[in-house]
Length: 147
Image 1 (tube, one colour):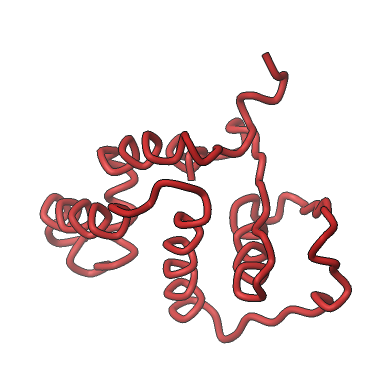
Image 2: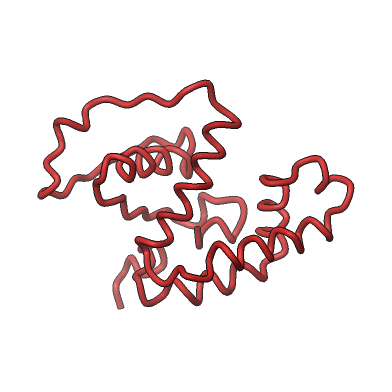
């Protein structure tokens, strides 16, 4: 057994079962409901969680590999960046060779959003996205490990 099995990224053949598990996770559904319907979720949490589950089922129906999952995540990142930031800038992509692999190291300022932003920029520039390994001891919500 690989000593990093517990923290390695998911492979294409594992994506569908992970997504099926996520769309039944009440805490995840509550987070998605709050993301899409912040005010209504405070008033009608169960109804909005159900609406979130239905929205996710539609969005994730055709997702069966990492690439198609990245397409869905990019939509969430678009909304999050639009709603919560004034702008996102980057520099240095011209120094990356698309035929080479790279190791990006982040501090623990924001263990999930730092690599999410890097992935977002790489994705929109046409590069392969990162494989992210995070020890679940560093995450507060268990479902975030699956994301």
